[in-house]
Length: 290
Image (cartoon, rainbow, N blue to C red; front, side, top):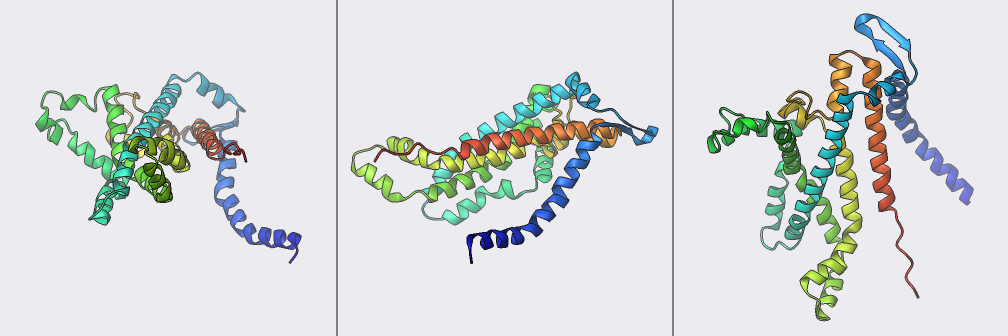
């Protein structure tokens, strides 16, 4: 078969999947974009085209800007902590001897739990009256979920606790792909364990690290369930992320146009983050000199 025939065959094979993707992804996205250009409040019977007015309103909306800041802070801190904790955990799992399978299974328990279940578990532990923290710290337990700074960091803690095993699993896969001969050769030449890690393991682990950062950044920026279960965005709106603000605007306030605009902005932020990490992941290393 000629190259042109192979391309046609490939296009024909990919066409059904592309059509399905367009139907389930591109269609709703275009519908959301069109809805964001309208002022639609079904309860009041209002539905008119307003152009970019919803986006202009968001630019001057303190609550939206606060939700954007909360989301960015949550994403940056949670992902950074997960990477810092997951790297030594992955190294420990990689070098574990007897009982390796059982240790890996135990480490993955937090990740296996549904996010809502894990968040509710921690909400019960942090309950100011009957929770475990209240028994250990009777005078300060009630302040954890009622103070904005502590409440947001409590949500970050729960997310880190649950998702660090997932990041460790990705890094472990990267570690297992590194040939052991490289480390052995370096040790024969007198390199210390720290030098082997810094000069061999870490550079070769870079694709796995970037892949983990890509997955977790996209997921953390869309955070909803952890914050909703722990604080519902409170106290006030001080821990409210973009996804929760969009939910309340769409389904509670009934402002479909403004809610669609918030959703589309969130989507564009996620796309920008994804493209940034994919660009870093796809960077070519400089060619080595012959």
